[in-house]
Amino acid sequence: MKVLIIGSGGREHAIAEKVSLSNEVSAVFVCPGNPGMKKMIPEIKLEAISASDIEGLLNFAKKEKIGLTIVGPEATLSLGIVDLFRANNLLIVGSTQKASLLETSKSFAKKIMNEAGVPTAGFSEFFQAEAALAYIESLKNTKMVVKCDGLAAGKGVVVCLNKTEACEAVNALMKDKLLGENVDHIIIEDFLEGVEVSAFALCDGDSFSFLGTACDHKRLLDGDLGPNTGGMGVFSPASVYSAEDELWVNENVFTPMLSAMKKNGSPFSGILFAGLMKTRHGWAVLEFNVRLGDPETQVLLPLIEEDLLPWFRASAEGNILGLQNKLGSTSPKKLNLVGVHVVMAAHGYPGTEGVKVRSGDIIEFNKNFKPSNKDYLFFAGVEKSGLELVTKGGRVLGISSIEENFSKARKNAYDLISQIHFDGAQFRRDIGSGQV
Ligand code: AMP
Ligand code: GLY
Image (cartoon, rainbow, N blue to C red; front, side, top):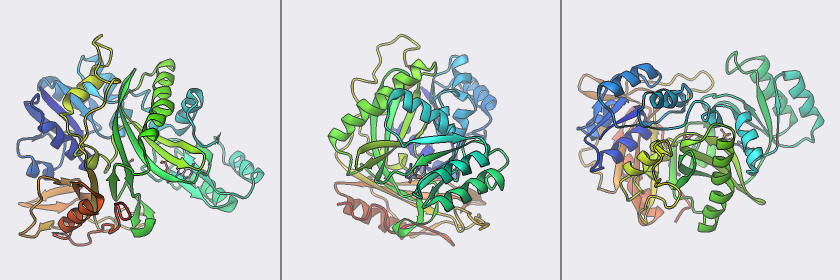
């Protein structure tokens, strides 16, 4: 089977790496991919079609007789690529445009969670700044969270320590339009305190298989300081997530969400990524994403022992073909190891407060840079300049290491990171610290 992967980041590199290992795969195409992927997996083919050109992707998939397409970014899903491919009888892993609302609309996600009885923070929604400000004034002076309803490239969530900060956030978003003209719908949520875990389920519309957990490090700097980023590193699995927690979340989050989505006329297929918080009162969902995480995928997939292709195919086939499905009864077998992934980002990333994110820095590796078969180098924001790989802004690359314990994995990952150089490189030195 020929497989097409859509996207260009470290997540898509990790998917390409895993899928390339499958005996069932004759060729792997990545659109648009990045030249670092090609350097690491020479047999893959890159095709310069943008992840937002869904008609172009469809034509390519038809021309190449692609057997299975796997979508990385949420933006591509929210354009309706899954609906388009299915209408053309092509198998694709991902959520439909309507089901993608779970990520693209926070208020839609909240309503489905309430219908499904899934625990989440209490919330109110607003379409006008005045109403939101009056609501904040009516509350006790506590922490609260102001969120844009739609996709906001990770900048749409403001955790506020008090009423003053909440009013400032509402004004910035709705009156001053700091994130753009289209912010006219926000929600204000109760603040929850606890430990955050990302949990991943591969779904087929009816059932799901659990893929694993990871803990992201969203802030730029050590000690969870500095601006929010897409994620500067992860470790997996989450040590706070016991076997009982897994059962509980499966029964009280994933199962009822799939039933509620089906009832709502938008069965959920693809990857359901639950952003969870373990609070004093138990688990609560902070948000859903409809895709694999980046950089979570870069440790999740290396920790899966089995060939993932049959599982992806089962997700894409769902019940459409009326087949006995693989998902639901079991989950892909995992290695009895743990993983740490450290991201190296470009100078200026994430570009908050007018800082320019730099491109064009040459990426160099020491002569003794020799990853073992338990280490992985995944490329993200890179491009070719002549014969050299140079930075292209954002998160540039990352190292994953899988080992029998976190201290070994962390040591291996950081040993390799110390042998990679580019001007202005930023990385955290505390990914997975405190994990044994
Ligand atoms: P989200 O995009 O909704 O996951 O929010 C981004 C980050 O904001 C989360 O990873 C949390 O750290 C924080 N956050 C979101 N919602 C809440 C909440 N209700 N209480 C506390 N922190 C939150
Ligand atoms: N690393 C967080 C995300 O992929 O949304």
